[in-house]
Image 1 (cartoon, rainbow, N blue to C red):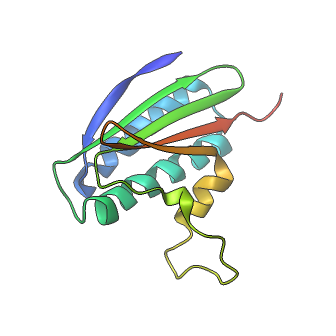
Image 2 (cartoon, rainbow, N blue to C red):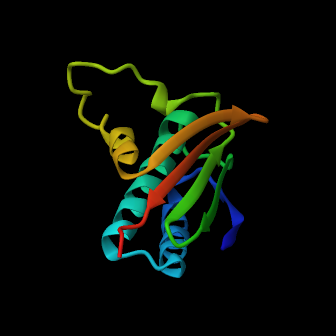
Image 3 (cartoon, one colour):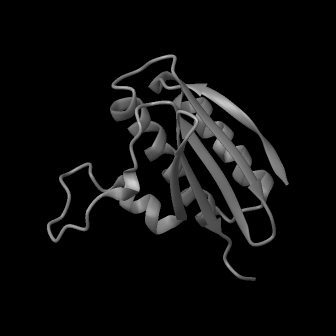
Length: 133
């Protein structure tokens, strides 16, 4: 099933709407509670990073969320129009990141992630595999 793309202003005031939308995507996709928690944490982290770091603060700039699912996975495409930045392109460091620097690492552990910059948009494609059975 393909869900229509939704656009949200990149403002922390819209976090509850982003999370309600994400919860609805998870619910209609039939994810388990554990799977839903992972998806929600990933989207919350990405949205927060977009607002704080991508756009520099609350703004009316866009964030887009699109999803599709099948029996094996839920795929979410997360986009923003902030300056090009690949959060997955961090160097592997032997020292732990500073406090607050683990969010993208969690996202990478929860989903297969792919980044591209195209048509003025940072695009993260997150594929959450369903638990077998």
